[in-house]
Amino acid sequence: MEERIRPTKSGLFAIELLIAVGVFSLCAAICVGLFVRAELMSRHSDDLNRAVTAARGAAECYKAAGGDLARTAELTGGTLTEDGRLALVFDGGWQPLGTCGTGVDTLFLLELTPREAAGCAAARLRVTEALDAGSLAQADILAQAAEAGSLLDWDVAALEVRP
Image (cartoon, helix red, strand yellow):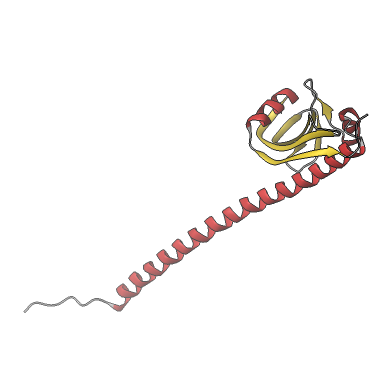
């Protein structure tokens, strides 16, 4: 007579335990992916909120200066570029950097570019993110930001009519 090998209860328990661990691992991997995506969305939202705050401040200074970019540069702490734009450079924590970003990984650039408008001083306000800036000079930061997509793009105008 042939003896049948009966499955033991401990073997079935081990298989059940392995299946439960596998399902738990799959659920944990999905949750980790969702948490990472939520963190990225939160950072982007924070950057957008800070960009709006910086842009509002620059727009208000532009309006207070009556559309004069030199006066706006004094009020905001920005610099005028060779082509007549106002540039403000911020680090990843949205602290102003002045003219260049030495040793900073992420830079944000706020630019005010004058444009033609009937009866008032107008400008295009653009906030961009330049990644991996390292120790770039301001010209390199401006060139890199020109290629990047903008976080924010507004048209602003000083309400005072030019004589």
